Image 1 (spheres, rainbow, N blue to C red):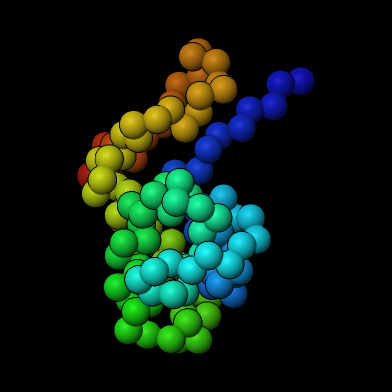
Image 2 (image 1 turned 90 degrees about the vertical axis):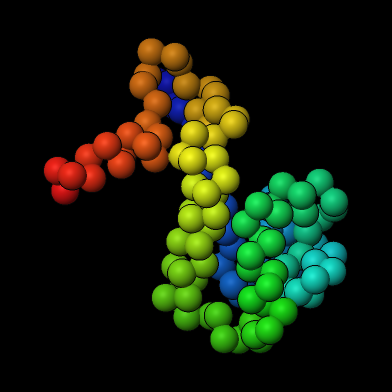
Amino acid sequence: MALFIEAPYILALKESYLTNHCSACFKQTSNQCIGCKTMVYCNEQCRIQDDLCHRFECEVYKTKSLNEYESSEKVLARMIARVIARLNFDKGEPRIDLCSNLPQAIPRRTWSDLLSHRDEI
């Protein structure tokens, strides 16, 4: 039996883990973001990897306390914001193949595929 693993389109930690787990790789760490002092990263490589989404969150965390972002609705809002940021960046066609270990015979789906059904919905 073959098992396929697909990389997620976006990643995000639950807010209660933001101050003690790297936002890029999820390992425990304590190196704070210089801007918001809320998110933490293992190293510069992890910070750069997460920067696409965090640059927008950073501005919010600079002005609001973390306690204001702990409800499940706000976690969902953060995930939606990350999807919008990613879609704005790559137009639904990631630069890297998120399904790189899948056989080529298995068709890949993209955000643009989903948008093609917009009128039917």
